[in-house]
Length: 442
Image 1 (cartoon, rainbow, N blue to C red):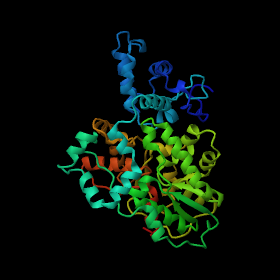
Image 2: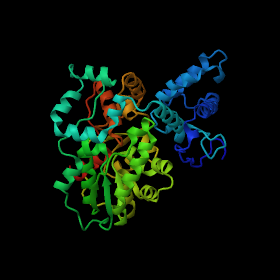
Image 3: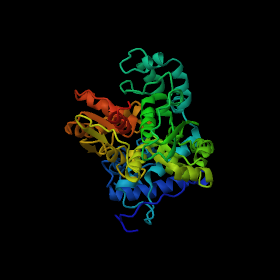
Image 4: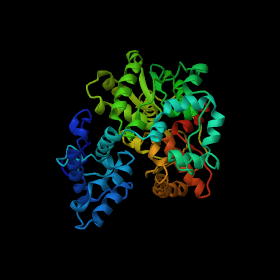
């Protein structure tokens, strides 16, 4: 592979069960090898805060070289990485199969795995990652939970910041008393049996976010598929493990992958495609799980069967054709291309989806939201996330569209908060929610 080649990058399996993976000396040697190449290139200087931190460490060293940087200082570089994969997929000319074999995000993951093996996940960080437990408990008293987590609550938010390090200024997701899975079971939409895609069968993997925090997103996906004749059901065996991956708890992710792959196997056996409405979860099922659990046939089969919701509806449009009934959306849409959707290497499917709506004007905003999942809600990180989102917000506002969309609900929420800081009130939606409105089913 030549430097700067247009060939698709190759990702190696994550050898997390090998003791060498977390061996301090071997990890430090690999950190220094890859950082040395990054220092000599610096192409990623403006992607996120990891690279400016790394280059500042080098520039401030006594010899202006990586040799003068203490290994203990590498932690600040790792802590700034959101595992968005954009350096790997869009910037780095030295990713495999190039002989330099750089994979910066998975190197950061390796460092976190070593930290987790040594110290575990901190108590409050661990509580934040328990999305299923939190969603179930908060769903029992959603009014109280949403009151306590509301931005501007001067009683609870300073306390949450003090004990759990969650920035008091960040807008947090809301909870609902009825999950997406329960709503789908209670009120399944009528299926259009005469639609062109009537021969398709699918199962929506609900994801923790759609299930507990945004059931409307799940229902939009369900109704659009039913409108297009797809025989669709909803399943939710559990969280995909992305929150644990961010903490370096790879063994927990592997357990989740095996469990969910077994649970989804009967649906795949029925000939159903697996649909993920949240891109981070789709990325886990498609790409991360097979690298972590590389010898599990169920995990591999689930990976091959999984589609992002926008990807799937666009595929219907191209192969069978969409059901009639789409109406224009007044004012157009500014669409943020989420990092974990881009990391699936499937093209801008959210934009392709929205352009299927008649007379719809779509402006693409192809910059980072800065949020980075649970990373962006932490004290200190939120300020950095807001800084990196500023240009994205300004580009979105300059597009002068009536609606704001992002394939990532958390990124969209963060951008909407940025709009608010600029004096613009807007609700961020997933593209499939806008598509459902165009069909008149939401």
